Image (cartoon, rainbow, N blue to C red; front, side, top):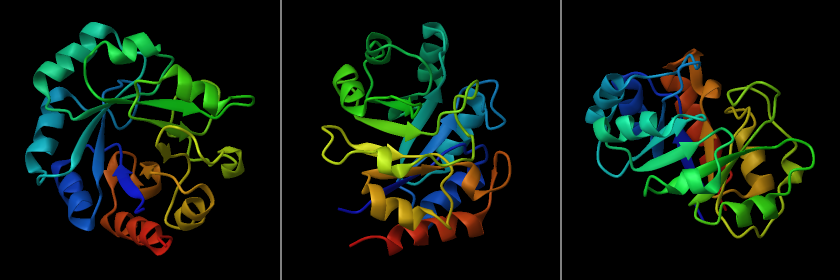
Amino acid sequence: MRTRIKICGITRPEDGLEAARLGADAIGLVFYGASPRHVTPAQAQAVLAALPPFVTRVGLFVDAAEAEVRAVLDAVALDLLQFHGNETPQYCASFGRPYIKVVRMREGVDLATEVERYCAAQGLLLDTFQPGTPGGTGSAFDWGRVPQGLAKPIILAGGLTADNVAAAVRRVRPYAVDVSGGVEQTKGIKSAAKMAAFIRGVESAQD
């Protein structure tokens, strides 16, 4: 099965459009004020207006107040929610939208338990654990820690670049991969050349 590609942290319409043109299946918009890739609802609307059809629009939140999420949903046409903090399954499901839950791969995490806990999620996104940092660490974790045969689609993230994504896909065989910093020229500004190289790397690992 072809590995899907999500390019996260899009802040400019031209970057979202280029990601889609190059073959990205999804783009991510960060609604987390502490992130250098944070966008306002107005900025997000401008990005989405530039996208062609059949590109999944994902909104990323980190322990946001319920009212904050609902305000974004009222203003921005998102297809999928991504919860990157310590959100409970009940909270994640409360918005009545498809969602994915991020699992930071700290020592001792049991992915089978997380799959069962977030049984309503569309999939789990696995990211590198770094204390005090909810994501965007730029570091990979040990891909050998991901068991095969989990009952949910797995999206692999954490320190992926054009140089290592083919090896990651071959090792983990994830449903999808997610990249942000690995395809940037500066934080929040994507590089067309890096996005193209990353997508070629994913495609080179397909059976």
